[in-house]
Length: 296
Image (tube, rainbow, N blue to C red):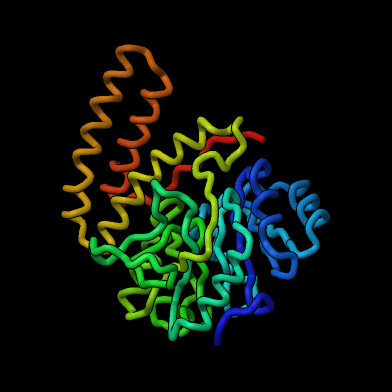
């Protein structure tokens, strides 16, 4: 079965994303249902977003679930066969969804299809090898896609053993690499991931959170980036490889922490401390417990 607008839901996980999410929602066709999972628990945000957009519902999470668990919560609350995962700082270009729908009619089987980022410098996918892709704008298979814009075939995924519990994303991962983990489990299950060059999106990246919280979010990003890299490598390649591959970053972070302590650069000092702590906590088997210290 190919995708249709009636059989597709958009899931957006937000966290103090008021400055960018409106552009995202406005770029989505009005006849496509949208579910926003808000990790900040902001009741006023929920009321405003549902009042302003008739095709949008907002689900307040009980606490800050992160990206993986937040998306899982959203996916459990949609009743369509397909779900388009979007970050709130993504803006679809015109006909982006229609191009994905059209491509799905020509692809024999897929677990994930994704648009491409509208950037000559960056790719939002990884290839199986470094061969040159024939850029004739036909969909092609890839190893993984970035999590800010990925369309899941929920019906297909729910039939696979590794997704039977309906936790599509690994909830041990709070932030970063939850998409890589999902893609790897999908590929390991002999399923296919495609990108569709005719479907394009724009992505703001780290600027998607309210600027008054940017420093606390930056600390959280550094902690979780290192923790998630260790966890991903341990899960898929073994503890020893995770330990060895992370050591250069750990020692570099310690050295830079000491350096910035001497020259009294508090922000830089804390950033590298949090990187080191992310590695240390992952290495001793601690969960990804750190949450940004934000007071609204």
